Length: 212
Ligand code: DC
Image (cartoon, rainbow, N blue to C red):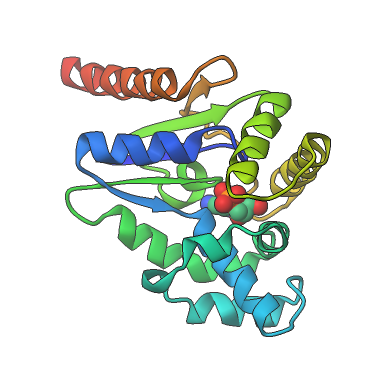
């Protein structure tokens, strides 16, 4: 079973994806880490994140088995990730790894922006997770403060909106729901309720398949 979970930053998709993978015994890939790792490689080497040739080279050299997730969460990497993610050559270089991951037995949950549209258009279940920008900013602020970062919620909101715009307006695999994706709005849902809503969607899709 392949489950595609897409949506904007801080919508809750990552937490839902991790919990769904654990509940169903599936592999999990946070595909945002791939773009973050490309961005970090460029920044570490002193290159600009909008240099297509260097970014594509960094994407080709990536070793996803050796990620240090904490180092990939900084604000500079977050900003640069959304820039490299708009470069078609970078996306192309990362497709095979993601597709191979998706087909590893017994199946996988992938979360990102283009899983249901580009990486796994034939996924068994597609969920598009959304939440209001204000709620997403509040969640992201709490998360950053828990890591000891001093942040202003208004700035976090402005940053989220900037990234949403960049991720949705790019021509290469923009952030958008697949036509057959199930919308899950977590604005008024806590973590447990969001997880249960995702399970309900998955079970409804599976039950529908059995009846046919
Ligand atoms: O989900 P995230 O915030 O870790 O993603 C980091 C950046 O990578 C974000 O700006 C969107 C981009 N991204 C993407 O374009 N496609 C994906 N499948 C995953 C992330």
